[in-house]
Image 1 (cartoon, rainbow, N blue to C red):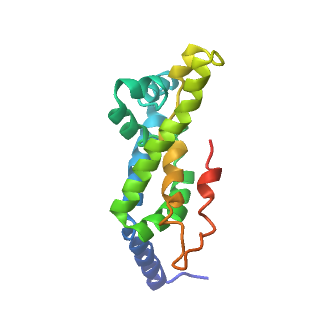
Image 2 (spheres, rainbow, N blue to C red):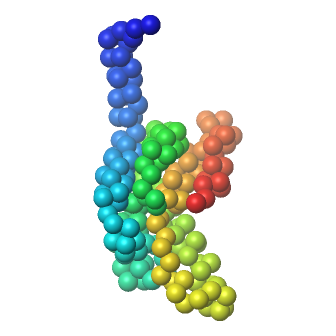
Image 3 (cartoon, rainbow, N blue to C red):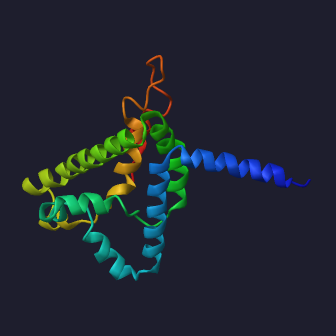
Length: 178
């Protein structure tokens, strides 16, 4: 069975139209691809130190919160890009198409920031109550791995059908753990 040139041209046009319908998602995926590629080129020791400086742990955000929150969204924990491409295509592209690029970006950035604050409150509480060592403040936490991927699909406006009922993926953010 041969696939015709016309069929390939049509398929390419459909894929390109889908990508253009969610530019923020695919620009972000392109950035993640570049940074994942860069991560694979780093030595393990350098990679750990490099990501530690961009980590959303307790120490780094206290020093420079804007830089850390922004840069933590640019890196993938472990450098595996393909699963992110699939998940962003299935979830984020749909949310961006429903919300519009600017609203999707605002929701995702707000969720990333809020989730960082919430997720770091547990280690802070444990350190303050002597349940975790002080060194836990410097633990490596790469932000995009959980927070960014879980943020847009859980948006109330992005997770509702026109009739007001939640879509099947509105609870996806509840299961997006490392």
